[in-house]
Amino acid sequence: MGAGVEQYRAFIANSAEGIWRCGVEKPIPTHLSEDDQLDAIYRLVYMAECNDAMARMYGFERGAEMIGARLGDLLPRDEPKNVEYLRAFIRAGYRLTDVESVERDRDGRQKHFANSLVGIVEDGAILGAWGTQRDLTRQKALERELARSEAHYRLLLDVAVDGVLFIDTDDRMTYVNPSMARMLEYDSPDDLRGRSLFDIFFEGDIPAARRRREMRRQGVSEQYEVRLRRRGGSECWVLASVIVMQDPQTGDYSGTYAMSVDITERKLTQIERERAAEANLRLVNELREANERQRERLRASEEPFRLLVEQVRDYAIFMLDPEGRVATWNAGAERFNGYQASEIVGKHFSCFYTPEDIARRHPWAELEAASHDGHYEEEGWRVRKDGSTFWASVVITALRGESGDLRGFAKVTRDITERRDRDQERAAARAAEQQRRFLKDVLQSVTQGRLVLCDDGTELPAPLGADSPEGSIALTAKSLKLVRARVSEIAAACGLTPGRAQDLVTAASECAMNAVQHAGGGTARVRGDAASGIVQVWVEDRGAGINLKDLPRATLERGFSTGGSGFGHGFWLMLQTCDRIYLLTGPDGTTIVLEQARAMPQPQWLAAP
Image 1: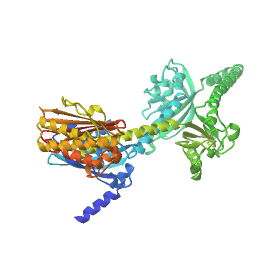
Image 2: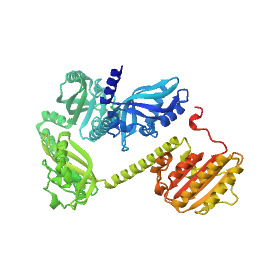
Image 3: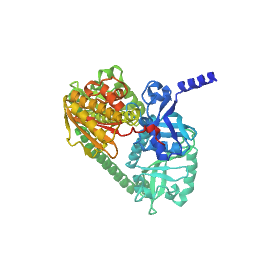
Image 4: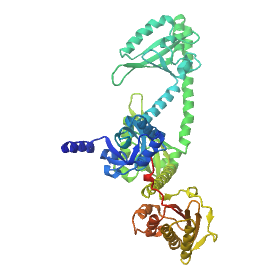
């Protein structure tokens, strides 16, 4: 049996798939409501085992680095998909297969995973869980990129001058662009989408259309002239270029893509030519004039675009020849890079890159990728003429002629340094907030709820009604004796036993002394409620605040001193002698509330579930 266990552990360690096991701080009863089970899972579940493949998904090198990580940190609760994932786990009887979740790695980057999870349930309680995990982050990014590319291509088809159709395997028109709808005199492409292809044929032409349909199903692409029926019943002649689409995996027929050029006028001209040569010549001349006007309109439409590219200042837009030398230069490029057109045209674009990028041949690799894939996108550092750098968003597009030969590249660059700085600041703020929430939970856990780290004044306890008649005490080295005396007086009035009263005196004395030593003083106020038997000691100062990173060690290690934070051996002692401590600290000062009850409170872990 020992050899089998070793083989099993070797399989887990060497698996390319993430494999992990979660433990719980205490069993989670399955009879709890779904919401209570969900809350318990977030509070009590931690990473007990995981292999290296799992750790790498979160940015760690070894699985051992993730041991002890909280489920609440791996599955952020503010992501709805994660909450639904855990709810589905509970509803499915603690067993799920291939369910997606959205998580964060150690650098705060969002990751997508596919999870299979089985709970360890015994005697009506959840004792842990085993799971496997696959990283879907790249797949999701590719899916988003594919969707974006499809949207771009669809936009291109929507604005195409020629008519475009896509016909599915049932001869239904699933896509019709606006030019095709106008060609057939329909108000909108929606009037044609979903209808049969044969609805736009004259009845006498349908048999021939069906024969061509059978040729397409056999994989024959072609170009031919065909007569179509307009909405009002008139005829429309088009030159149709038909491309057969096949399933990339099976090779089966999956539809037809057709581009149609309206040649009605040409056909009518041909008919007229047969009737009279003179009329034919006149129509031919008219067509030539129309073509010339079209070319003139095209030239006129290109001129504003050329002027726009040359004058736009928010983007560097320029052309490269096939070897990467600068061929054109616009105002935005001059603004970003600092070069005049006369200084840069003809030079290799690698001069915009850092020495490290040039050493690893990165500019040439970008051109190779754009040439192979059609375009290349990235964000990275770029260098200006004066040697300063900026963070740039770069898109390089390969330009090819009709025969497919590479004519050069179009390069668009945008300075996004400010946006990157803002993103990094927001990420740092989120990380700091997550660290504070984690610290708050840790301190609450390791002290069994006795230490409450407050985010603001609303989390401090309500002041008890009975204050000392003398009011607050200004804290100095000489007033510490007065603090101890007032605590003893109010503790006795509230019915605390001598031992518990002395414990509170010890805690209050340490707290007040820290304010004097590390914050230069402050105020202390003692409140009590004889009915409930609770005494509060409020100590406030206007010092520099407590360094929170030292708090866990200060709470657990006797004799540890945090120095400038104002806590060390005294803070550990306060936790040993006081029922509960509320701590609110920041750069403007620190407020500490010590609470002691007539009877020692029951620990949370002994409370009924």
